Length: 414
Ligand SMILES: [Zn+2]
Image (cartoon, rainbow, N blue to C red):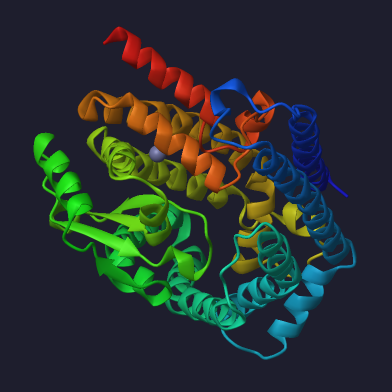
């Protein structure tokens, strides 16, 4: 065991420990009384159910995390990384093919081992709380399509990265970064038209009150919106949502069919306005730019460690290789990624407040926004009283009560 081993081991345990503490704080926050703001929206039974949902998911999370940690440690300390390497090398392929095999097998193993948890979450937990609409057929098709897409889309990118680090010397990290950025932009453009339709059906929103309300709002804020889509979210879950896709002329807003079914027109317009707020305030572009900068930083660091003998010794590896270096660096980078993630989440949460503010200032209907948030929370059994430490570590959205409070303050300012 050398210093790399200690860093990785401490990082792995620290993350589990911090998350467990945050979970315990979170569960301690639960109260029997429905918060005042939600009296009348949440009935006592439904509220109890939301707390049970949180308890069940938290405990399930602990099982899944412990299992994952155990698998990684057993594989690591029984020399699994090296055994797999020897096995792959025995075929006598080129290093890049070896790398694709090595990383591919690790991904398949990981996917396979996580299936029981994923199946339990979908067909037992979500089912018990009335959310699950996924059939076994959909579940299996999703899994197969997901794996095929990773091979088809991820394979060439991985081959490129392996080849650059294998053959292009000190500047490899810059080439990898450029290729990864181009790849990310291409994905961003093709996802709405080529990838998402593989998983869901998208229809144009039918003519009527809702469509005219959305289009007239878009015209008010000079938002060139031509297309409102409806996605069959109900194929998998009763939970509801809305999102924005595309760039330039391909911009479109997509509403889950479940959202349309459960909300009044002004509430849906408020949700749409919130999504447009993300767009108008350039949050999407901001996220993309930050991703690009983080990618560069990561590839730069990677170039220092990818063939570090000490790092390979930690994992009992005889041979140094680019592909195994990628995996080990990923584990070494985890603590850095953790802190970078915390900062990113903070920005994402601040953006939520900004998008709410935009929606209220442009629709001038704070009550519709508040009503939409309340209904979404109740329908999705969201936790109303998340502990600040839990929010800080995990959440991409501020707690709903905080958002409602912030919206009310906008109302007072006029
Ligand atoms: Zn948002």
